[in-house]
Length: 250
Image 1 (cartoon, rainbow, N blue to C red):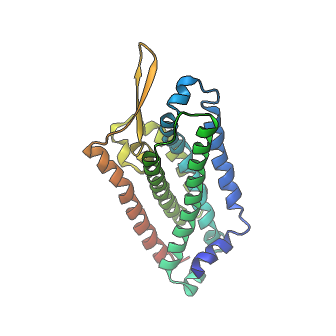
Image 2: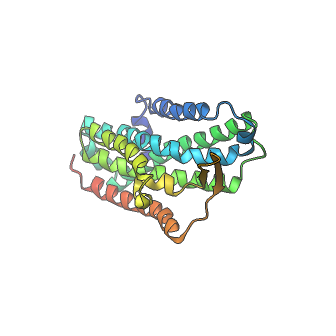
Image 3: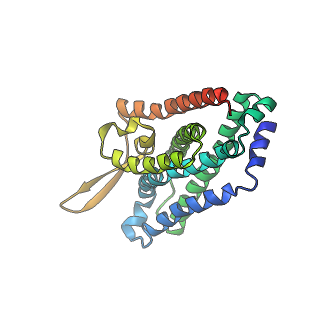
């Protein structure tokens, strides 16, 4: 607990909360703009359509947000060259674990704010009925897992490179790659494709009537393997980051 408190003290003047609020505010603005003038059909299918839009927003924004978060949590040791000093006070494993928990709490807050916003927005727009809580709950857990896997990847890169522009560029590249991977069948087995492979809703578009039909997905065995891969990435990136942090000299 004291190690975790130390991580938050190091962030005291970094205003990382304001940075996260600014980035998540872009997502909120996007969601406000899409469907800002709902018609009767939008109100009827609004809840399922909102759940369809969420992974697309996340795959564009979340890799960059996770890169910023990891960079802010790692640059204290780089700038102050204090890694070796900290290891004399705490075990390397405990220090790395504190960074993971600290980042995880920020991710939990961001994900909770994201889902509370879309639920409040749905009620404000007068969507028919209520959200299907089982699907929204599953989407929340999977969104949280995808963010955590990307955060652990970005934390690993932030510890490897002194120049934090490298992991930040990787985060921006991951956002772009996520869009490209939408059109590749094997995208779901890569970390940046997790948001799309975990999507609860898919759609069919009729080119003749120009009507979009949304429906909840039924996962095949391959798609279930892709979902499991999200948690495998978490274990891989966590183990790799812990080993790297323990072996760092400065």
